[in-house]
Image (cartoon, rainbow, N blue to C red; front, side):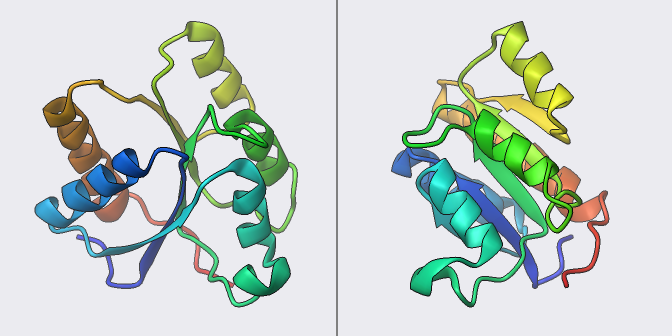
Length: 146
């Protein structure tokens, strides 16, 4: 299981999806703290500790990234994270409603560690998040935070 200190940054503009993420992780017993930002610009501000709101932000162990967000989309965030020497080692998993092969391929080419198509069925979405959380919390060892 996850260490109590596991931190996941969730970049997602849909509050209902964030709520379901929290529920699914809690139900499966994943001890992770979620930090939520609503768009790509906020995600980069958080990661770079910019502005008063994020000056004391903690580096995440994992980023869950929606592709289609306002102001700056997930593709731009992924490219910026993987192009930044200080951030590029943080694993990024894309969570998107898109099942378009072009989007999947682009995410992997930009450096995504995984791509999960969000199911429109709430029960199935919860199951996908449980599996994702279990995988990252119990099987994968992220680098230590700096």
